[in-house]
Length: 113
Image (cartoon, rainbow, N blue to C red; front, side):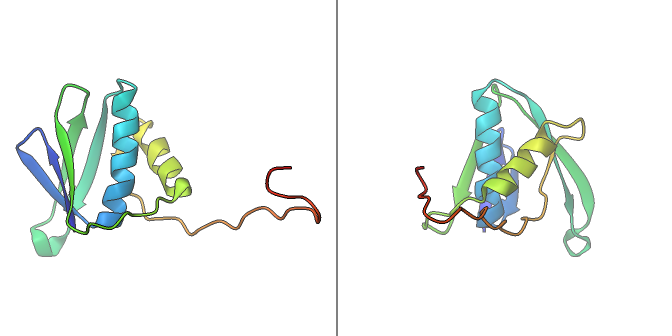
């Protein structure tokens, strides 16, 4: 479990794997000077509700991971999250897509051909 902290006042607990993917998308957009919203729902057992925050290069954000291991990133998931962040509805945490098989290579061809 990790924590996203926005503007020193709002903390959101998110599992480490999805948090690592959110961090990748958030940092990429902020590096480009882009502002965008992030929305999520609180489950019924935690009181329920819908929430949104506004990410902008002027607002501090931190990502804290409690598991010290590196998390391999799924580029397909990052693309889907980026697409959501670029939409009018803003960034939402979508489920991780299954890994897509690599395209078959013709025989005798190496990866650098």
